[in-house]
Image (cartoon, rainbow, N blue to C red):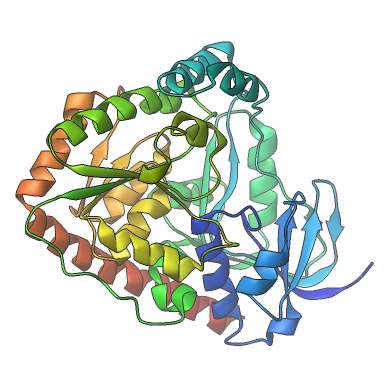
Length: 382
């Protein structure tokens, strides 16, 4: 069994913008102390194409692993993002909710239904590591809907950590409950934009009102409540366009269900693909928007870094935590996802865009300081 030096673990290799930004950040931070040739990026489950990872982080080794594998290494680094979680299995009622959402404007609903029927929810698990040292950098935990096995796995993986920082209050509370009081709350690693961008980001000058809105959507198959946003959001987008807002959908990865839903609107869809975009270049395309409505946590974070206010769609708890972290520069759209509530939030931000933009910039500064502190503390312990 090959002994590796530093194994970097995260949701890497699946063509997701937020996870790719986290990977770049973690590699850049670790490379301040160790050569890239000593860094191994672990990809859980073969993603089919590792070439783009080599392009993003040249010089690092990339290996695939499956649950049950044993990885021999000196140190393991959990490099940001949601590391451990477990949702309940997909229920028939949830599948029905997704079918209704897909049938609104899909050109071939029956094909969508067949895709949905194959959805399976899985817990997030990792191989076994033989590392003598472990570190966790700006990670998120939970939710844990199904039972104790996943909680035990998370607890056992994190207890040996010489350094453990989390991104939100819920994750810190879990660590305390699990007997890890040394865990510190910092911020999401992506707030260290210099580490993932590698250059100064060009931020467009903001107008005095919202004219163009980006809507970051994702396929959601974990909970019926969260999935119910899909149908309501489509109605809201239609209404906003009738109110003379320009609205474009944004995909942070290849969302199969949403791509089929939006198949008649391809000119209104922007999708991140690591084969076509760098992380920095795609984030730069967000400059066209005055406001972001997002179902992805990094939709709000990356927009905020570009100076753009957001509305977080609470399909899962971490959207609430991101909303809290933006200190008034963001609003929250929660279940039951009433369309008029979302429209009212858009109008409120539009009528006070300069104020919301200012609050967003201040929140980014505060979160950046916390994220940079996490990196600094980690490197000191390393």
